[in-house]
Image: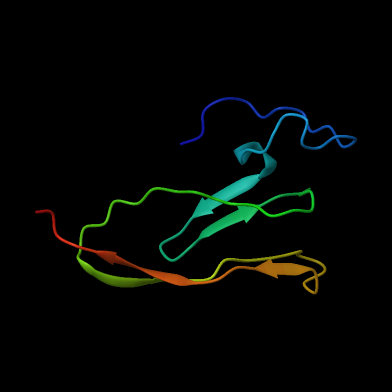
Length: 90
């Protein structure tokens, strides 16, 4: 849950207030993915971190992250997929 107010975006120095969730105008948590929407995103490399609470042991695939502009899908980025394993508590 996000608490607080979004700071005003300074287009002359967009990272003056640091990077944070406030860059996204909408965040949708879905069963198979998280969808983030932003009207402005400075060039660079980003890391989105989240916590999970696994309940079923096994090995799971993490789908590769992708990003693209809505009206210009030829502008895009992507990352590597991976796997993670859930083991029972001992």
